[in-house]
Image (cartoon, rainbow, N blue to C red; front, side):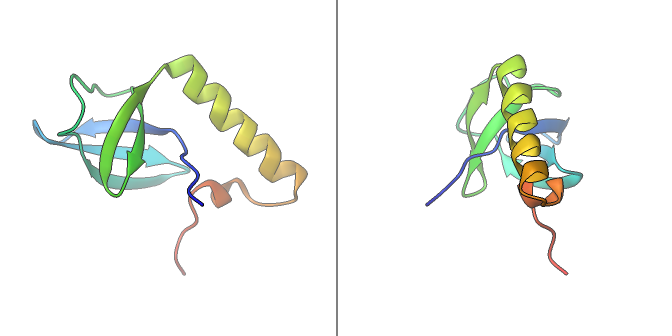
Length: 85
């Protein structure tokens, strides 16, 4: 099962690459499959490619729901993007 979490575009690296951020973790992602991605946009990433741009308000609402779920389960919100030890 795959669960897509909205990630925020933190930086535009060049025409084909962006840096995304979620839970304090930044990742380099290809933006070659979608048009006109800007810093502050939210995207869905699959296998290293941004595959869809999301409405900012909806993305932030989704992230808030994931954070609430993690809190209710007694989990860290880092569970949204676990860090390797």
